[in-house]
Length: 488
Image (cartoon, rainbow, N blue to C red; front, side, top):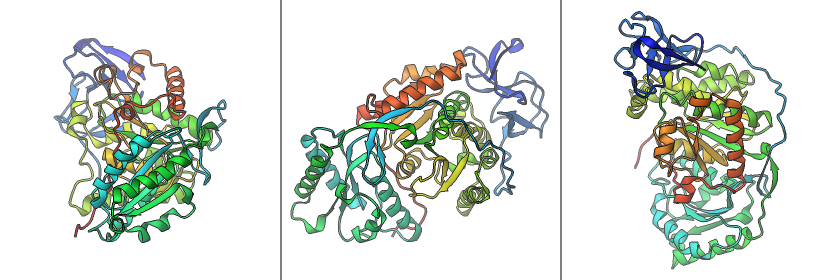
């Protein structure tokens, strides 16, 4: 990451890769907006603009050195389907770093938790209000070793068909099986498609002593019955204790939302350093947002562990492109208005910044929606870029904690601790009620080693329960389920 100054336009900028013909403006008083791109050399119409060492689109006009590069002179070059060849380019053997530990909960069925909470999961949206009432009534019963009782509303579980219904079932079960839940209450209406007989087979191998069920149509007072079942779980949670666990027992989800021109340079790149650290120590990291891999997929495909994983990854990429085209939508329908305001022009540019969160880790698995992460290393997870849906999928995949990078800010949080990492210092200073960690300091210090150590310590302290995220303190946690088909 090279800092230089273009005196002709009085502009300080960062050049990311020596191959780049553009750079990112870091002068807040320049003619070109902070975080946007500036041309480092003349680019003719039809030629590629290069950032991160890779093309991010095609010039639609001649661009002169020192000019602003954005939507007025740059367009995407993405195609609807990619042809890929397996060309592995990674080092399989990584020396582990020093032993790192956190204090977490070791569940009897092999799961790991960093919180000890009771989660109330509605099998169908009709009982959302019941779940909320149970959580509210049970809050007064919380005692030792319980971090809270939480209900997760959603609109599905009935009036769905085929793959949509199957996804709802698997995602809800996956969320319920997350190790941060020391106890789970499944609440059913009784007549829905996703009733208990349908969802319970998803809990094979789960410690059933930590699971309670409630069918509202069978109870005279469903709220009272639900609170009694929560009390049963609370008595079990009183016996739980944190213990010293190696970093390898942690599963970390990776997500970016409201990205800006610095996301791929600071926050995402910093998370990539942590991804390398945890995977070198036999831990697990999960990267999703498939549409934000379009244009950067070859960086990931070259790191797939073997041909089987490569083929699954290609199927995931082209499968999501097919999802777009089946709805007559272009695969490049991204970035968002906020992304563009922050300096991101094309999906290729956004994707090249997004995948920085994966560091240089070997990709060991590809997961479907609702599927649990089971392999050490970096897993890719099928899911959209939408913040709420993708974070729900990360939770269902078993992520104990989510590193959520942002250049614009958001108050949203998943059921698991969602660490908001700002890409720039201005956002951190403005939204301290949202942001947990400031990666914007890297624009000033460029000291990735020190920042990686600081972030690692922050994550370990959060995982150990010593730090609560801003969203946890605010009581914010939500889920959203992917939907594609018919609603009856």
